Amino acid sequence: MDKLRVCVIGTGSISDMHLQAYANNSNAILYGVYDYSKERAEAKAEQYGINRVFSSLEEVFHDPEVDAISICTWNNTHADISIGALKGGKHVLVEKPLSMNVEEALKVEEAVRQSNKILQVGFVRRFATNTKVLKSFIDNGKLGEIYYAKASCLRRLGNPGGWFADKERSGGGPLIDLGVHIIDICWYLMGRPKVKSISGHTYHMLGNRGNIEGLSFYKAADYDKDKNTVEDMANALITFENGASLMVDVSFTLHAKKDEIQVKLFGTKGGAELEPELMLVSEENNTMVNIHPQIDHLTFDFKNSFQNEIDSFVTSCLLGTKPVAPVEDGVEIMKILAGIYEASEKKSVVKFS
Image (cartoon, rainbow, N blue to C red; front, side, top):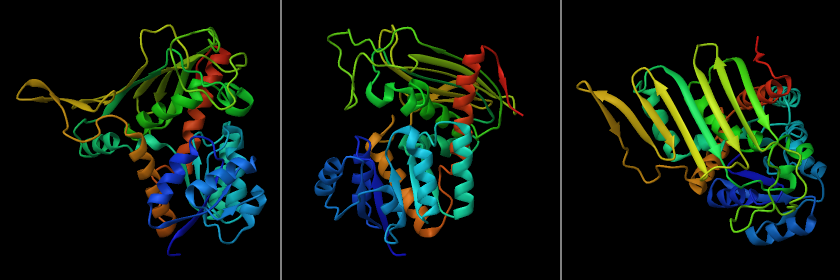
């Protein structure tokens, strides 16, 4: 296989990041596109010069010319589409989260095992410039043993509505939409330790807050201020078998002064902040020092990260190498997300065997 022929499934807003990145990759061919709205699929096909607009998922799965697919659809379709594509002999890049629950995630993992195909989960922050630089420091022992991490992604007003606010389609609110990213990036940089226990809380206090005026925010295409079945906010303490711990909080809406994103890691030899911008803390000559890397992107570089993610996926498919974000990582992150929801529902600590 000289070039990877790709079909993008789902043509919502996130699909543009996939489509643009494939178009920029000389080893990929945008072969086809599919959406349940054929009109929307045809518009994307025209925009990106794609010749094939599929009329069904089954048609995609059975087309021998399709080597790989990108899944950019509602969360509740991720598992079924992934499994169908893998059974059809396709490589898969699936947007996060991998699935709606652990049971589905395990079925996807089994399908990957049986198909011997590549599946990469869309943990795009792993491919950010600041993440790569920090990981190089961590891999070289500059932080020592990382024993604590803390991450926040708090929006004052930022419930996108539409399918994001519909639990049946999304699986949850800010935890599964925003928390999945910051939990994954901490877990990844901490060395992917095995989870021991989780305590967590979710809150349904403020709703959509469609009454707020004068402050703009992203809204889904099917936004409806009166419809919301997901949590406003979630927090958790995740403890790992190696003794390390991760504290996290996320929100779609909160009585806060400003939006906030923070990712911090603390080790035996040094510490680091990944967000709001990369910085390291260390000791030199019995003095604590702050280290400010001189790089182009100190914070999450959205477009460049997606390009890196797609480029990595294409390379994995063509060379048969293990992806940076493999299916087993998607399963573990789903276990953590499900554990937080379970701990909140049961009002008790969830323990893992």
